[in-house]
Figure: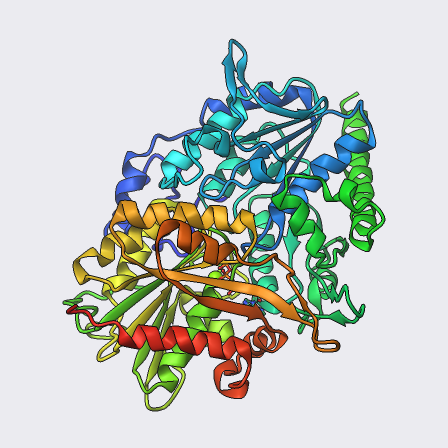
Length: 323
Length: 270
Ligand SMILES: Nc1ncnc2c1ncn2[C@@H]1O[C@H](COP(=O)(O)OP(=O)(O)OP(=O)(O)O)[C@@H](O)[C@H]1O
Ligand SMILES: [Mg+2]
C-alpha cells in the first residue's frame, strides 16, 4: 500500500518510513506528531490474524460509500441466505460498525452475551451454522454511545479479527460502517496476509449515493481490494395498493448499472425497496423466510448465487495454483 | 492546500450554530441540512452551511455547487456562495479536492485536524445561522466538531432519524453522545416518514412510522415533526434545485418550514 497520503507535503517520506515525522518536509504538516510517534513496521497482529483465519475459506467485506443504503441488511441476509441454503455451510458475520452496530438487532440477538474462553471470544450462534460477533454485544445498555476515536476503534477491530473463535467457516461476512475511514483501513491492513476474497459494494440508485461509491471504488483500487460486485438497493418502490412503481431514489445518472459499465465493474443486481425487508429487520427475522416469494427475495437469491459462484471459482483457481 | 495563518475568530461573529446529527447514515442529514438552510434563507436570514463529512460530502452536489473552488482570504477560507448577494455560503472538503472521485482515506487524527480548521478558519462574516452537516456515527469527526465548538456556545443539535427501530436505536446512542459532550438537543426530526403513491394517493410506511416521535417522548426532548418521503425532494437534490421554493405547498415543505420557524425563535439569551 502506498503510504504517502495524496495531499501530503511535497517530499513526504511516507507514513511508514523511518524518517516519518522527522524529515524536513514534515515541518508544519498537521500529521507530523502522529507520524513521529507511531510505531513502524508491520504489526505482528497481521500474522496472528492470518493464522486465526486459516480455518475460514471465504472472507467477504461489505462496503458502501454512503450511509443507510442497506449494508447491514444485505450482510445479514447474505449470512442468513448462505446458512439457510445448506446446513453444512458454516457462516460467520462480523459487525465492525463500532458506532452504530445494528447486526444484533437485525439478527434478533439483542442482549446476547459473548463469552471468553481459552481459545478466544465465542461468537453468538443464531442457528447451528450461523455465528455473529458485534460490538453491540459488548455494550452494557442499548443507549450506550461508543464515542471512540480512531485508534481505539482500530484496537477493537484488531481484537475482533484476532481473538474471535469462529472455528471452521465457509464464509465470513464482514459488515462495515459507511465511508472510507479508520475501520476500513484497519480491516484491509489487518487482513492483508489473510487474504480477503473481495468486497461487495452496496449503493442506492441516485447520484448523491453513487458519487460516494466512486470514492469507495477508488479506495478499493488504492488498497488492492478486489471488487466482487456492486448491488443496487432500494431501487424502485411498488405501491402495495395499486402496484404503481415509484422511483423514490431516482437513478438520474443511470443508476449503479451504468456506473458499473463506465467503471468496468461487475453489477450484481437491483433489489427493490420493500417495506417488508425493513420490518423483518426490526423484528430480527430473515426476510428471505418471511417473504420467500417476493420479487426482492428472488433477486436476492440470484445475487447470492453469483457471489457464491465467483468466490468459489476464485478459490479453486488459488487452490489449484497452490497445489 | 496551506492553512490560513491568521485566523483570529471567524466563528464568534456567527449568532447561531446548529448541528445536524444522526447516529445512522442515509437518514437525510445532508438533505435536512440543505433544506433548513434554504428555508432560513427564504425567511430572510444570512446563512452558512458547513459540511464536515470528509469521506462523503454531499452538500455541494445537493446545492448544485460541484467543481467550485474556495478562495483564500487573509483571515481564512472564503466560503462558496450560491448567490451574488452572498446570503448563503458553503464550505465542504469537496471544494478542496482536485478529483471528485478521489477517496479521502484519512485516519482519525488527520480528520480532527481538518475539522478544527473548518471550524476556525472559514470567514463566515455576518452569517446569522450556521448549519453544520455531519457524517454518520459518533466518532472522530463528531468529537472534533463538538470540542472545537465548545467555546462558541452553539445553539444545539437537531437529531435526524428515520422511523424504523434500527435507525431509532442509533439515534438513541447519538442522544447519549450529546448528553455526554454537553451539546443541547434542539429536537428530533423523523424523516422519510411515509410515502404517498403519486398514482393512488395511498400512504405506505416504507420505513415504518412513528419511531422518531416515540423516541422524543421517551427522552423528553422536543419532537420537531415528520418529513415524508417525497420524490420531488430527492429529485431536487439530484438536480441541485430549490425544493422549498418549487414545491412550497407540499407536506414536506410544510414540515420543514415549521422547523425553520422554531429555529428562528431560538433566542440565545433565554
Ligand atoms: N424526505 C425525503 N424524501 C425523499 N428522499 C429523501 C428524503 N430525505 C432524504 N432523501 C434522499 O435520501 C438520500 C439520503 O439522504 P442524505 O444524503 O441527506 O442522508 P445523510 O444522512 O446525509 O447520509 P450520510 O449518512 O451518507 O451522510 C438522498 O438521496 C436524499 O435525496
Ligand atoms: Mg450526509
